[in-house]
Picture (cartoon, rainbow, N blue to C red):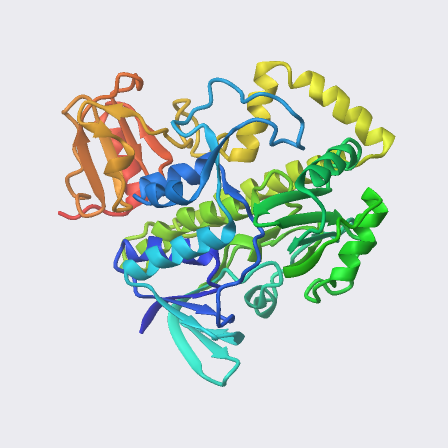
Length: 475
């Protein structure tokens, strides 16, 4: 039997599949599209996602196809310099189109043994105590022990589960596409600069060879966003906002999206789970959507693998919802706030002006960027050291880098004392006796997702947390 089926072969589904394969879980990805999408929804990776790629040995692939940009001006496009003191070794945004991210993640997933079945659309599902049966559009039935819906904002899996998706419908739609323009680049730049003085949801970005990525507010809210706009709709809206349609022609692809804000009430129903846009949708402000999904996958992967492999402690799989649901709720709040601040109306502009002044305080600027980049995420593991529940940056050890030791997706005990032990858990947790000058603690236990589960030098306390996160020890 297949261990885990994943509905949806986007970044979330592919990242999750690869994470599961690190633990020898048999995974099949069911993707309804027969070919990769040409649509470029996301344009980059934020710092926490970059850390994840580094932890899994993938970062060099992404760096080779992306461009590093300073980490400033990403909250509501308020132009501020990058904040100082960010808790990461990767204080930048990696500009990379989603098509490249999808391709790199699929290549990685296939390399580690994931089976990707394209043209496989899920239309039905049922579950029992032993597994989940999925019905595909061609009438085929496939069975697995678990199913994860990573099938986007209009998730079929979520609908079939009957999970409520409360929130706010779209209030403002946008048109997005790639097309050629018929005027000089300097003209485009001058007109766009003038329009963006009042309309920050407007933009034309050059992609080379006369092709531009065009973003413009739509005339109204679409009844069906699955129906793509026409080139004439783009021309009409460009003329409405810029006084010219720039002579746009020869579109590569055209799409529309809204700013709906919704969050699934539950991320798990029995043996079926939700991740990525299937669990949450929100405005694209700050570029957080793809990153949020990738981080869902890294949180869920090792926990679901533990369940499949039989060593998960009670409540571990349910901690996925407990930890990630509040993170998504916070993203929904900050993206809605950013959409408000992008409005050209006098009220939002007054608030924007005030916030811009507040962001001159370094602490405010850093706090907001930590939200956008997810560096500020801290899971509630109870009282303890300030590092508890946080990610740990890539600290330098005497024998290399911390993230180089996390490639296998296992737990890791970084022991500066040499007196701690993971005896009984050596099949799940690596023990590294080494020290980091910038990390003034005797010992740190990291979960496979890179978050700190324990800090100290007390073996009894360490054993308690090993049992909490990695189950019973082996005698």
